[in-house]
Image 1 (spheres, rainbow, N blue to C red):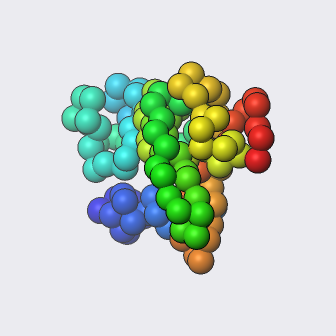
Image 2 (cartoon, helix red, strand yellow):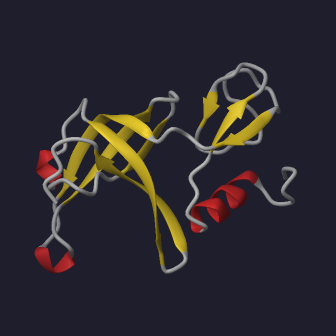
Image 3 (cartoon, rainbow, N blue to C red):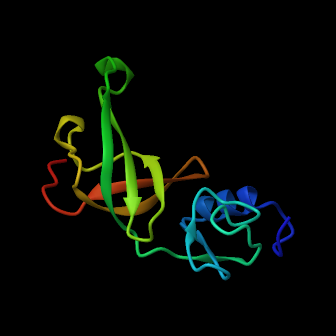
Length: 129
């Protein structure tokens, strides 16, 4: 539990559901933490604060998941490293799956669909969709 009266992961999802993407930052070592934790994985400290990230990042790895057109067609699954130093899996939405490249700069946004928030990314340059 945290000072919001719910667990950190429930708090994180509640914020996403409201359209807000937050990271934790450790008051002890100053490093950012993602996925939400009760204590810092870097130093073990419990002084984790919620902060809005700048939102910019770089594609660290990418793969294309092949799907039938009737199932929505191909999509990319990307590992994005935010400028804050944390990595998360997501999708790059404004490019065709085969156009997403390692090293590409992207910006985070929250998509709320059916009341559930999800972090997605858009390429900063070279958008084709």
